[in-house]
Image 1: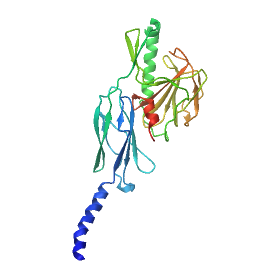
Image 2 (image 1 turned 180 degrees about the horizontal axis):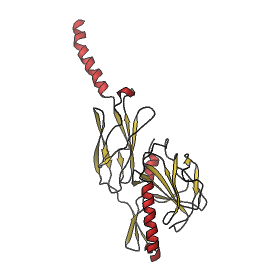
Image 3 (image 1 turned 180 degrees about the vertical axis):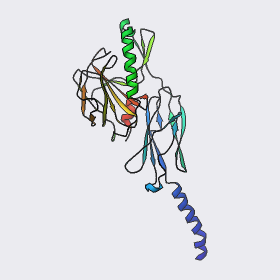
Image 4 (image 1 turned 120 degrees about the vertical axis):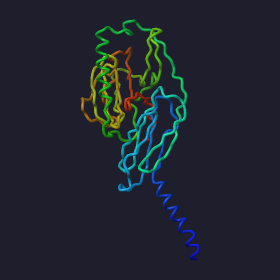
Length: 284
């Protein structure tokens, strides 16, 4: 009996030490994405705060990930995949204290559709005054979208309106056979006056009438994530107002450079314009 005890005691101690070393686990959602998508990392660590070495560290495509702690002492990170990211399988190593785990994300090859549009030249080539205004507003938008604040969003994101999508993310527009742009959002059909609602909790950080976007609302959801609502016919929120998921923030319209009533909706995550549909699919 003593022999068996001496034999199995080292094995049991080794198993205990091994299990203790496996205190961190990582979940990636989803495991395959398209260029322009967002994926989620969840890092589960020892629930004992004294054993927690701090926020995990990881990079994807040269960009450092921003992890945020949850109420149950776990960590999450929403990571943007730039639309120009080459298709391949990417290893992602997450380090926490002396532990490290590696997960893999596959960026699939995808050819975005091309749309050819013919418009009057004045709609394509801006006057010096309009060009100056558009440049100033682009700087304003960049400044607004560069902030990273504490997490405001809670749970899954909801669509901003219940109408059908008329144009998807990533469409390459060729105007008058020469000028090109990429549609970095999605367009929702809608009659003027159709309610537009906040996709999650946050703070209104911009409420302006812009040259391209017309009446525009930007909501900061924290963790570097912003939702953008353009071409509104009216505002139902004020700047710096805190809003909740589902709250009406405006009405569908055709203000700005729009040829008909619709909602242009987009997400900007840590400075990257991403496909809203990929965020709507995440189980948060």
